[in-house]
Length: 147
Image (cartoon, rainbow, N blue to C red; front, top):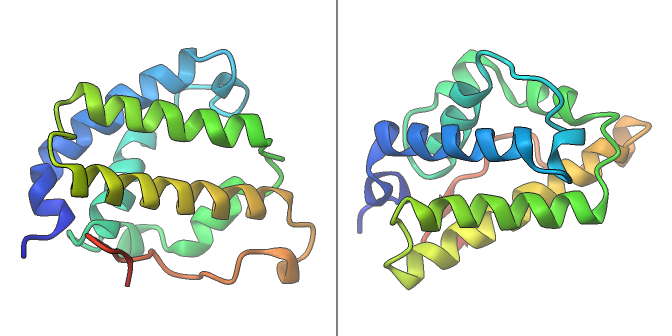
């Protein structure tokens, strides 16, 4: 069976989706309090993470590492409304890119973003390392969810 990365169309397609998502997040009334400024490498970082999660190259781990991901979310105090809106806009962007014709792929992406946003939310409220989510590596997502 092909990986989610291959099914999505690889780096080029994922980069285009992440760029569209990022534009929406910067302008969204709920998300713009988290995405407060345009960062030149943000789309690349989002793409690397999603690609690696979906079974593609391990660029996120090799170039940034999971500690980086923890650090950028820490202190953000992500609310339930922001987490839910993130998921909604992310899925909407995949839909608009024409990637949700396959119900199984749609379900896999939904479970991926639901899980990831919950981890980010937990880490955003952590005042100590013990309060962080225990995951310390980019999760490998499959058609059935996390490996």
